[in-house]
Image 1 (cartoon, rainbow, N blue to C red):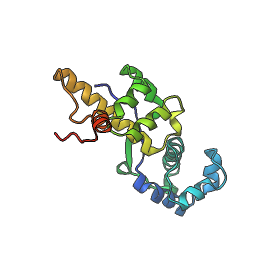
Image 2 (image 1 turned 30 degrees about the vertical axis):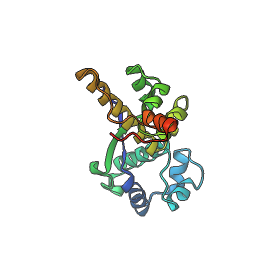
Image 3 (image 1 turned 90 degrees about the vertical axis):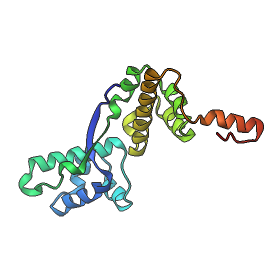
Image 4 (image 1 turned 45 degrees about the vertical axis):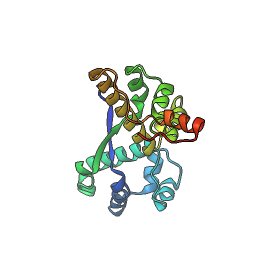
Length: 184
């Protein structure tokens, strides 16, 4: 099984609390928005709705806050601790991860169809687009389906003739042709 390229970001459940803590200690959101090339008022807009920014913005904010804490320990102290961070699949390397597995976006979406048609559509959507614009939820889905693919490939190598327990597409086609469910 090949290793994923990973990066560290703040956990979503503490993200806005950490931003608020930095604000309480003197961080000016307008300065951060200018530094990160975000639109004026962007942070207030997403914060008021408790939305999660896209991955590239989320990562940029996380890195900015970590760097600010590192360079201004006397002002910000230890707001961000290592238990507030988590590792995620780095979308910069998503295409190379697929290439290492000799897997195209289309083949991965066909594999994902057994899990969910929405997931397969999501994979096809991001096939040729800049992956840094993904939401965190999409990134987690990609990571999950790639690790599932790796597990199935490993099982196939260990047990020749291994099949998935449930084939959604087969069951769906049978139901559309006959009108009856496959009960196994």
